Length: 75
Image 1: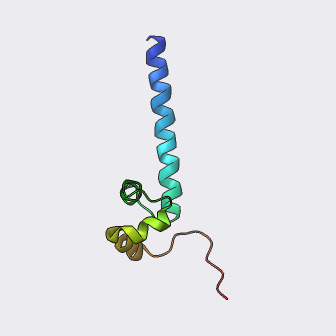
Image 2: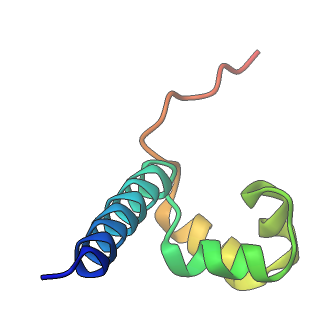
């Protein structure tokens, strides 16, 4: 095993961990990886703005309901 192999393995593990963290963070707010990719493709600066630009994202969000985060204070 060469030093390059070790570096490649470490990079791969780090990317895998970051991807897992991202997926968890997105799922916490009721988003999917596919929906996020669509949001980034349409050049939105935030996921919330992307909903208005992407009808399929809006449908996906409505279907899932609110995320597991803290409910908004009304009134």
